[in-house]
Length: 111
Image 1 (tube, rainbow, N blue to C red):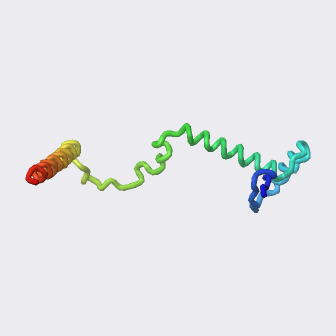
Image 2: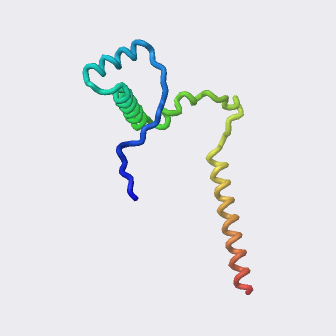
Image 3: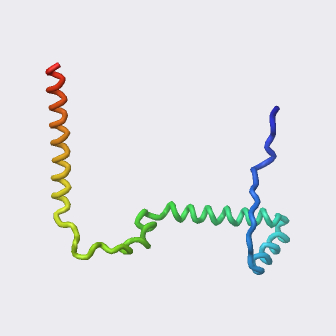
């Protein structure tokens, strides 16, 4: 048995609007012949599209702008020579992997 869809599935939502907004919706309804629900749906869809477009044009640093500088850095306990420490750590990890690979290789040769 097949069922045909009549249209998009609609969810019910309740919202409170001030008198001016309701009056504006009524004016648009009278002029266009659209239902109040259609007018509100279109307005929300336009708003969402506008926000989505604004978000696409924002850089990640723009999105986090309100967070930048909001956390204490620790005062004068800032890291020094970070590049050198990080490079040393990476080299040590690489050497440890090489030593482990050599041990695995010598164990295989002994078999």
